[in-house]
Image 1 (spheres, helix red, strand yellow):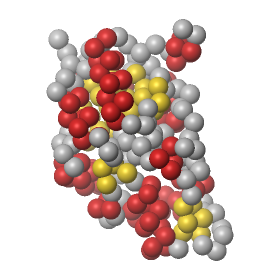
Image 2 (spheres, helix red, strand yellow):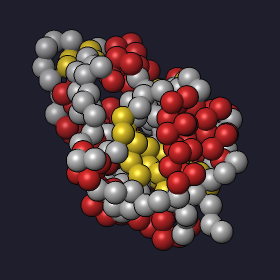
Image 3 (cartoon, rainbow, N blue to C red):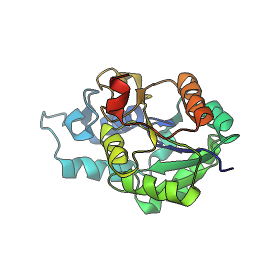
Length: 215
């Protein structure tokens, strides 16, 4: 019998990113960061008052990864939850980083006690999630991510996958509504572990989110 499959994001799911990114912007680039949106460019403003363009935001992100990844810290209870879940499921970390950062991410997560396969991606995550499901042929699959756009992408390309919206940074979570395309929103790994284990135990494909809303 095939095992379940857990596909999880990394930044703001397994490791904290924005708080350390904000510190770096403040210390090195005179850029202020607010926690008002999941769209990073909207949260960044130069000390002189000008907002940043999408192109400028991406330039700063590419400056942070991989050179500043040593600043990042693990999300509370993530290590323990992933270790427990990996005893019953295959685990893949699907992270939106450039391919040259893959080795850095593998080493970073291994140092935190999360030694699992890392797949780098650019753009929507629906297509790579569908590819991973086809590769593993799991009894059931669960996807965890902090960005609503990726839940929508997975809903379109791999609708049978359960989708859990998690935003582990408290300052960011407070201003982000639950992703409409996700089946649940849980920001704490202890509760998330129980929710994922229940999906594994049932071994049923995910229903449309609309069906959950009417039951």
